[in-house]
Figure 1: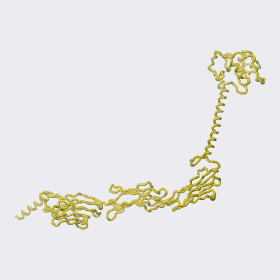
Figure 2: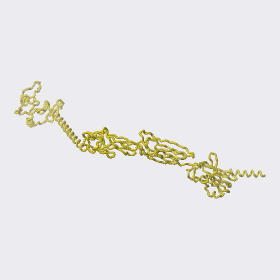
Figure 3: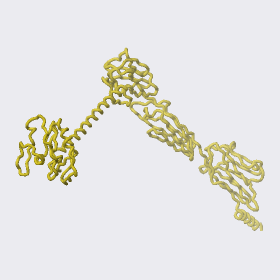
Figure 4: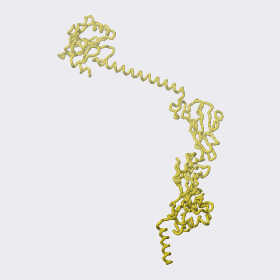
Amino acid sequence: MAMCAGIWILLVALHVQAGNGQMVQMDSSKSGFVGSRAELRCIFINSNPPVKISQVTWQKLLNGTKQNVAIANPALGVSVLPPFKERVSFKQQAVRLRTPSLEDTTIVFSSLQLSDEAAYICEYTTFPAGNRENMVNLTVFARPMTRMTLTTPTIVARASKRKMTVATCVSANGKPPSVIKWETRLKGEATFQETRNQNGTVTVRSNYVVAPSRETHKQKLTCIVTYQGEKIKDSVVLNVQYEPDVKIEGFDGNWYLNRPNVQLTCKADANPPVTIYQWKLLNGSLPSSNVEIKNNTLFFKAPVTYDLAGTYVCDATNGIGTRTGIVDVNITEFPNNSRSDGREIPEVVHNTGAAIGGAVGGVALLAVAAILLFVFLRRRQRTFKGDYSTKKHVFGNGYSKAGGLPAHPPIPKNLQYPDDSDDEKKPAQISGPGGFEASERGFDGEQEDLKRPYFTVDEGESREYDERTLAFQYDPEPEIADDMISQTDGSVISKKEWYV
């Protein structure tokens, strides 16, 4: 009988445990940063009828080893064990006051530490259901400390152009590790190194390597650290010291005799600034009488002479070293119109050039006019058969040798020749239709006039003859043959003669 009663009690206990399904609710994972507050939730879902909770125990599971963190007992109260005693507590006040209600036993970490990262178990001890538990994984992040520094406060550029680390960017003690990138106009190389610390954090270091020079001075370097999606920027400006970069200004390639107010200036780009300027003249010495040195400028107080020609040297010195600038000065007798520096030419040079240009333009204009006049006269000359000389050819009938045209009206009998050679008084010899030569024959009315194509008169008498000739009227004007060309003086010639 007693055995039957025991079996019945066991079956009831199994029914309560399996059928009613008590459970412990927890988050699967939680996370937080070092120094932040974190809650680990633990809630017991009781059965109906409810079971009795005897005790709740929090444990830390790390590398297979369990460590008690906190215990809540309805009869004995609450206990938090070291090393969590100062930082862990139960969230519900009823639990802290030893009330029998232990359904919510959430614990709170007031300030997380890296060592808190582990798996935490919340275990309920009940009667008659037995133990119920669940687990949460706690991850602790460490925000890195980011800093960017110059390797040295002052970087010196050397002539060897040796590469060196000019800046360092560090993201220290981060968990998880950061990612570093550089932002700059400088051409250089970046190196990266990761170091894992004993507490589980990682330190990332990046160096930027360049060859320091004058061009790298005052250049900006920016380090960009990306951590958990957040970007942190830090920048530095390089301070590079270098020897002077020297050049001499003032000589424009147009130093001519008696030019006033000339000077040479020694320009030096240096860091630190130049403290000493020294001038000298190769193969000679600076004239002390008309030369004044003021700071970095060489003033010539007198107008330019040939004595100023030579090679001028300027030595510039700063805390890093000394560099030299050189310029060759040559002297010309007259100004040079083409300046190398593009500056305005003196007014006297402009006026002289304008006068010369005007004279050249006038001569060119006269030459063009003479050429046009020559061409015009030449074309007028080609309208007559023969050449213009001291004699003027006058057509006897107002036309050329075109046959079949009406005869010219009779020429007066009293036409006189001027005093001239006998040859000029003779009529020209022409070939008649029968091939005979008409020579030494005088004019005989209209018949002779038809046979004579033209005759000559002196220039002095040509006007009187032209007036008498032009007094005749031709009415109607004869029709010009197709192979004839009319001339400006009223005559016509054949196309064959025109193109001779």
